[in-house]
Every structure is written in structure tokens, then in C-alpha cells.
Length: 321
View 1: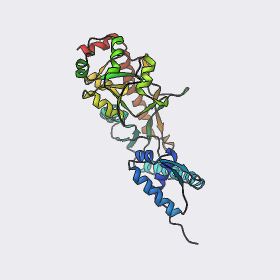
View 2: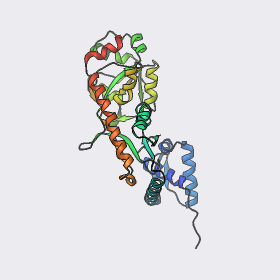
View 3: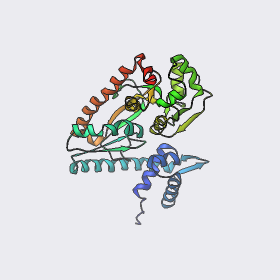
């Protein structure tokens, strides 16, 4: 019997990602490769297999029956391989903790606290993956992940936070925002440069600014936004004085406390998304994760403490100062 030359593990991962996300472009973004590389790998896969795994309709892809059958086996196999690697890795690297998180939260909240994590958990090597799909343990080797997703009832979250506009002190003064009350600030917003990222809230038609505006009663339907892919890029541009960004408490609290950003409105619109700690199934009994979880709860308490302080009308004095 002739042996079939199996596709590479990387090719199978690309196929699984494209199937799951329904897009070559999104698969490329998740895997950190170009859309063209994804397309070429799928073509090579189909030639090797001798059948199509996707129908192409313009820019859309639709799994073929054969592709659907293959995907089930590929997903199951990748999961098993990942579990074995995780278990064996734990045996050899008991002093290592790998955490996956979205880029914004990793860069603007976790990295500034990395020294505190290392000080509290001595002799532990921390690695933080900044990825778009942190809970995809088959794709990113991690012991646990901090996920960011729509809130659900009866689910425990690491902390509560709010959404509110922020800008640099210089932009606030230049735009004449320093001496305006909340009502006048709302009237000014449609005339300002508003920065936003590509993350979605509630549904595919409502981004961060639209959701916030609906909650506070301001009309932004005709507003032109400057869009960027990642929240940390948008907030960095706000710090540099390029406009007003909509911040999440965890991502802007350090910049506000250091004076790089000012909070234009009090914390009144609750973020409908939340952060949860997800543990790799193979590491539920990994003692380091439990220690990290306790430390994480202590550190995230500071987010609530920051919000308690920002609820006061004193927030306007940040600009005037």
C-alpha cells in the first residue's frame, strides 16, 4: 500500500485557522503571515490531497464537504498534539509560566507590571505572548490566557472597567477643552479628531465610539474617525496629541496617573466586554497558575481603586492643571 505524503503541521494549522475564521486574511492576521502565504499554502494542500478544501467565491471561502471532514480530524489531532507537548513541557520546565494576552492589555497593563509579577513569584520565568487569539492553545503554546470577550451572565471576570474619552493635556488645551463642563464637552466632540481601533463591541455595526456615544446621548453618526488596527496604537497616538481616543480603564490608567493622558469624562459607561483568565486544559493542576491567579487579583484591584477616584468631579482638574 502506498503511503500518502502528509501535509506539514504548519500547513494544517493554516487550513484549520482559515476554516475556523472563514477568511484567508483573518487567518494570516492570526498566524502572523500574509494573506498570500495563506492562499498559497491552501493551494499546495489541495494539490497534495487531490481534492478541494474550499470553494472560492470572490473574496469569500466556503468549505467543501471534504474540507469539513478533514477539518474535524485536523482540529482533534492538533489538540491532542498540543496537550502532549504541554504535559511533557511541564515536566521539564516547572519554573516557567507562559501567558497569552491581547496586544493592548499586554503592552499597556501587563508589561508595566512584569517586574512586580517577577518580584512576587521569585525564580519564575515569565513569558507574555501578545496575540490576537490568546485562548487558541493549539496555536500559541501557553499555560494560560487572559481573554477579552463580551460579558455573559453567571461568569466571573477579573475586574470591572469603564469606557471614557482621553487625550493628551496639550491637545485638551489646544482644543479649548480645559474650561468646558461635561455638556459643552459633548457638544465639542463631533468637531474633534476622534481616534479608534478596529475592535468591535456588541455587534459588527457598532464600534467603541458608537457604543459610548449612544450611552451618553451624543450624535457621532457623521463623524470621521481615524482608525487603526490595535488599541495600543490608538492610545499612543492620543498621548502624542493626534486626537481624542476612547480608553478602557485598564489601558489608560497608567498614562492618566503619569500625566500623559487626561480623562475628559467620568467613568459612567461600563465596558460590555470583560477579561477572564482561561487555563490550558492540561495545566489545571499547575501550581504556578494558581499563584499567578492570586497575584492577578491583587493587581487588578488597583483598577477598581483608580475608578473609585475618577468618579469624582475632580477629573476636570486634571486638564486645568
